[in-house]
Image (cartoon, rainbow, N blue to C red; front, side, top):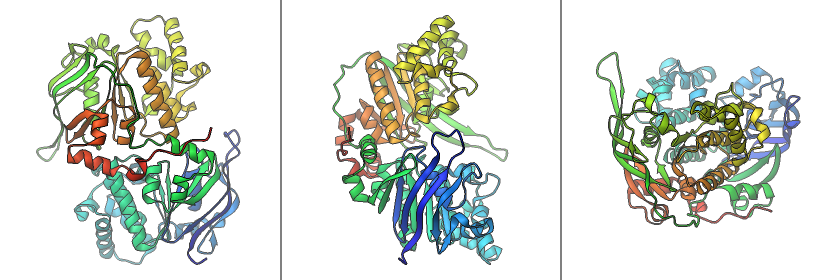
Length: 543
């Protein structure tokens, strides 16, 4: 049919010897049509990103390569195209938006120069015409002051602005096909909503076919026309969006949908308010950026914030990037100092306690970080990672190691994992190790900074259930930082909504969900991907 833009037939991508399976993708068949968004959904390791990269010849050959099948685009089989032929297709006929623009953009070149490079390679435009086109493209993706943005470097832009620049680059030559590889995963919900709307708007305007890779079914509900579900390299289900979301056929699809956090508050027992375990009192923090050419820029991260966390309670800190929630969390753990105000831990004021005297307090409060791979020592075995804290605090090594083995079991890992290194685990398993390490000192308070934002929905559900179970068993207090209101509703007893360094709303979870008072809170709920769909009960997973 003449509206078919890309036809993938029996695609198989081989993996090197020793991999967990022979093929990353096995016998995949998928058709993309003009003017439609096809969402390719699956967990990490399902093969979805490799399938997308195969289209552009970006596989890490020769160890990972196409071993069978075809990818037909404009009458040409891209699996048999030469490097020169692929260079003519990339950027001009097929555009790609990568997951992390900071690694995809060259930090040494301005945004304008990088967008103009596509025009320089594929068009006869002179330098002046290219500059005018670049400014127009940046304006099309709704970037403020596009001429200034064009002269800026990637590090001078926010995450959402960098992603918009990537979209401008990908759509510069109005390609027939746009591949978007998890382009909104690292963004907060309001920026994510803007990017999704922008992609949808531009795709409809130009009649582009879009292959959108995601693990978030909320995004699928917002943007998809067609849905294809990958499980360990096999395409297990395809269909129209509403059919897949509302009447999924395959058990794997039903299990994924059941794991998606919804915009509902699950029933939970009402806990009696305990004593205050952690408190911020009028906390203020300003970041000052020095400049060689005059007065530097100041950013108010905390503007007189006061909040309490009680024994056995889970308090959520919710807000966009830059709202101050992570700064507040790190200040309450004393990983950074505040300019004024007080931090009180279990009745002890620790704001100005020297770091050398913080050791007794460290036993009471521990932190779970967003990226366990960056926070776990890659040179240490898991046993040593978990046992290190107790040993430093005086526990005999044999007892510390015994405690580490017990904690591995508590977080759902086999004790045999103790002799392995962090890189030998999946992202969800590394997060479990991070939780075990935080529990090793038997703290009273856990501070979790975006602990599930980078995880697949099924792994995310497991980690959230694990945190809730551990908190109940050990009567811990949990300060939970997130930008995802769906997650906050599942686990938090109370929610504090932060904006521009201040708490604009604070109430119990059910009240905030039923009747948010502040316009910003209402805007956050409205920006949740697939908000209407996410408010429904999920299909039941197959037994």
